[in-house]
Amino acid sequence: MKKNLLYSFLAGLAFMPTYTDARQNKIDQSIREKEAISHFRYLASDELKGRDAARSEIDIAARYIAEQFWKYDAQPIDGAENYFQEVPFRISSPPNEGSIIYRDETLTQGQELLVLDGKAIEGKYETVVAGYGLEGDLEGKDIEGKILVVRVGGPEQMGPSQLFAAGRKKLALAEEKGALALIEMYNLPTTPWSLLTNYLNKPQMTIAQGDPKEAGIPYIWAKDLNGSLIKSIDQSSGSEIDLNIKGKKNLSITGKNVIAKIEGTDPNLKDEYVMLSAHYDHIGVGKPDAEGDSIYNGARDNAVGTVAIINAAKYFAENPPKRSILLCAWTAEEKGLLGSAYYSENPMVPLDKVIYNLNIDNGGYNDTEIITVIGFGRTSADHLIKEAVDAYGLRVTADPSPEQGLYDRSDNVNFAKKGIPAPTFSLGFTAFDAEIMKYYHQAADEVDNFDLDYAMKYWKSYLLTAEKIANAPEQPKWMEGDKYEEAGKALYATEE
Image 1 (tube, rainbow, N blue to C red):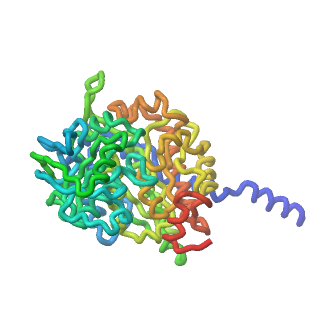
Image 2: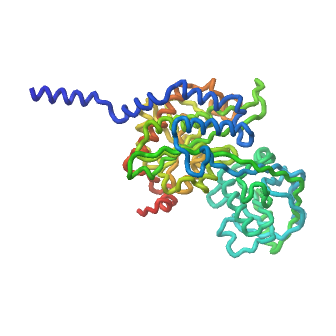
Image 3: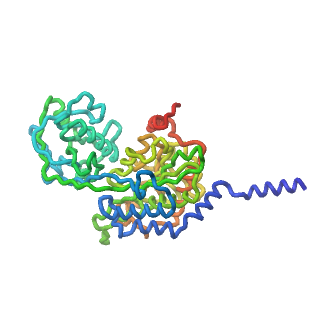
């Protein structure tokens, strides 16, 4: 009799749902297909005109996200009225005229010169050359009332987003120290100058330094592919250049990051946060395609990620984990990771309380049996990601195109630089092939041609991943030797 009872007990255990099965059931009950796809269809609809961060429709998208946070009982953050963190932007248009004359060489706006920001200026001014223009480069140099001339980027900051992030820091330093203008000499082989002129010789959005209504000092990129111009200026002590920038127009606007939180249940862990983030902007209205469609709806990039954050608001409000959840929908990612950059410098939750950032960004997919995690292999949470993805019949793969530098091209990098472990949870792709490029930043990127069964698996596996990390006994860490490992130790005040 006792033996039969034991067999019955063991048989019962075999059929008991596992932790993962139980959480999947809760996710399935919470995330309903029509509801989630309705969010998706609206955010990628023609009415939002492609969610360009410089157009008024972006505010409609922000309001929609905030309303979902409110509806699902995600909590507002202190200082973020109506779930909004306001971001001061300036839109700076190219000048009517722009030139630099140094000795017998003339650089002209739109050809060898790109004026990216700032006010008009005319005159002949003394120059100071200072390496990359970073804090250490300026030590002991008097740049007040002079033109600061530096190299673009930094010692290890050569990716597109890194160049602009470094440029913002240099510009703030130069203005603080009284420089009249900042000129960065461009000599990188990675991106041809001709592509830069096509992309940058038009209105540019930047985070405003100081009063957003006041245009700051001119910020200029100059073509110097062989480095001869900066070398010549540097070797001629007290060199002067003629700087002529006329007809500069600057407009201040206010962007919105949409932020909410869900408090954790564990008294010892609820002061730690797992940040779930995605950018909600796209590139707006552009050149019509062959069918005459000029609205770039951005279903893949990144309405699908925004819906994941909305789904997270609903699910975690109903099923709060041990750690708290921080929900972040970023603006102006397509303008240079600006919304997340602003938050990283003006956090609404102390960054050392954020133990992980599970970011979402996408260009598209070409394999619906996988999830591609940009940064897989770099943190100690990999096994939790794999368990969650496996549970939905998918496989997790690492970045298949490391040469693209994708890790440092999305919002996650603004937090990785601060030390927070921060991978990007992407749709499945095995290469940047024709299938990806058919939709990436194209008018064809719409919900109607998205595999919605795959979308549901993607959203649910993201939630399960986030939940596993939020309930894990140990906070994730960078893998030994990762380039952001030291930043992590400094942020969390840990020593190995």
